[in-house]
Image 1: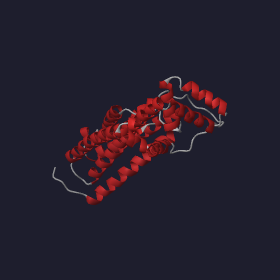
Image 2 (image 1 turned 135 degrees about the horizontal axis):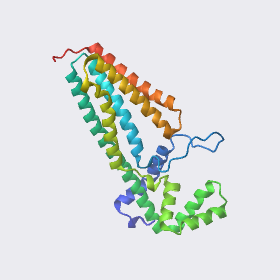
Image 3 (image 1 turned 135 degrees about the vertical axis):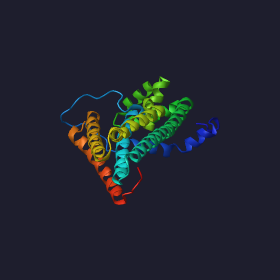
Image 4 (image 1 turned 30 degrees about the vertical axis):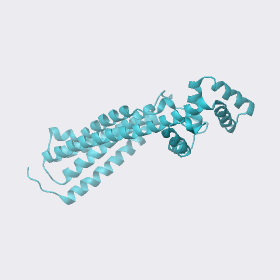
Length: 273
């Protein structure tokens, strides 16, 4: 492609293309690729699962809200302060955490989407300026996948007839991107904010209606039950055993809460009611 026909931003992106595409592939290939193998199949695949990053943000939101706020509340409760200080800490933790999660998810998803869109923009330039070279490149990708040279050439030729199909195919095969799954910044941000707030409200709720040890015990039991339920519910998407998935999330939350409660007991701050 004639570099003079590209904008300065596109030239910089083109120079960084190997690094960016390598980063995308490393992010999407953290686990070894699955291969066909015999075994039982439980349930059906859920179409569109995981698109836009909203589901991931929701899972992290509930888990982070629950674990962080139950840890905060147990730490403050362990210090022996009055109920109003526990409520203040819990509400502050809920609002601060929810805002932080929402803002963080929005920024991270926005930056990720802008990088992906830049790569697609440059690929569209290349398809328009040098279609024959892009066709040969696509055919070479299919040959490396094991197709015969003749079949790879014919498939590449057919795919290159429609510009939209050509761009989508090059995005998937060359860049490792799915144009339909670039991520929704607003969806991830709103989902993170609401789910974190829900998770953080769970350990705080008992202190709205009770005080003292009764509220602490109720908060711990309620938080543990919700942690187990959320972990078990995730097995519907992961295919893992529900009790093990729930127990894993419960143990993580219980460990964090126990540590902060122990630290609070050691400090034992006396505050006026």
